[in-house]
Length: 351
Image 1 (cartoon, rainbow, N blue to C red):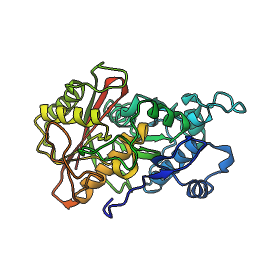
Image 2 (image 1 turned 180 degrees about the vertical axis):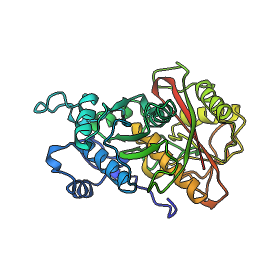
Image 3 (image 1 turned 180 degrees about the horizontal axis):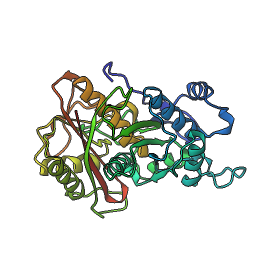
């Protein structure tokens, strides 16, 4: 991101789409090579391999024991193994609970995993729920992994909405044409022990809230009511200022406009805001997790990251969109997300 590089490019893959499409995808050779260090790739789907590699990488940076009754695993995804929908050899491979059980067995976890699949706020909701469970004393450690694939199912769905961009997406830009899809997996480890050994980035997860404006099955609210309510409650509960905002920023005309309305209604329109989707696209159920990780790194490094693809303001309500990388004293980040069905979420992270 600091080098101004994007993973979004044009693909010609007829197994996914009869026409070329723009997306960010995980390299299969790298994935198989990485996963081979843990198990035989033939026994696991691409989705499962991505999740396991992400968790293993995160755990390798700590010395935490996860094989105890005070550890919970939360899987965040919208579609899981949807690419196996036509696979008649496996028994119901697309059931998310089966996938979670397989991952639980691989990781030797005591507790049954929790699955959160709530459209595109899934990842952020998973972090919020994990933090709530720790505060309630239910668990001491929560592993949250968000993951999704670029599949034929997902591509055909977004194509039916005519919402895919013919080129890398341009969040909040006047000339934005739509979103770019992405695939990936991200993992955050939440712990009640602020001195947990080996954790490299100690960012505190504040209170977060979700809401649903029940506006439309796919279209965001024109008044931004749901997102505004989530932002307002989050700021009020944390009683802390906001140094920058990590927006959902899908680069669709209606989403970016709705976010600008909600942010303005919350009177935080002058706070620096960015979207990370120009770097790796919209990763659906993984977005909230991956973008929270990026936000945490921004906080740790006191670094504001530019909004890839943005050059000219394109929302009715002006926002302080970050258009160039720059250093800044940062203590808090407001992460927001919105999704189909009118769902919204907001979470504050701070040092």
